[in-house]
Image 1: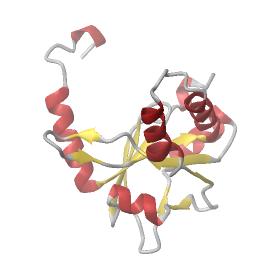
Image 2: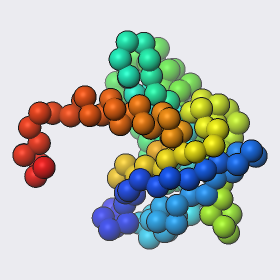
Image 3: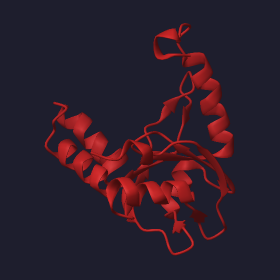
Length: 162
């Protein structure tokens, strides 16, 4: 079980250069090593977020390698009981585009062109900790996601202490 103090958290602004390189926040790199004893991670398409109507926000999700291997195993074993059509969609949307990565000594990683294009990553980014994974969003898309999140919030949050 991962060390709870090392799970991914926070929002970190960053940039991506013209070659598609960005710097993984030091806090996230440290969490990979502390909680998962491995610097390797897998980057793939994030689950699209509905913005209403037929509009969707698209970003990337990054998983520690061990977590990803478990997700992949469970998906391929069809533990969710999905139809063959649904399982094929899961493979095409998340499993097949996935890329194993390792940051260089400066913390930089190359985001593949197909994933950059999918998420609309051009210059300004947000790295967003999501507990057992972190997401990468373009600045503009993340602004829209936050606007939608405000609409999706329950009216009463006292049960969880807010």
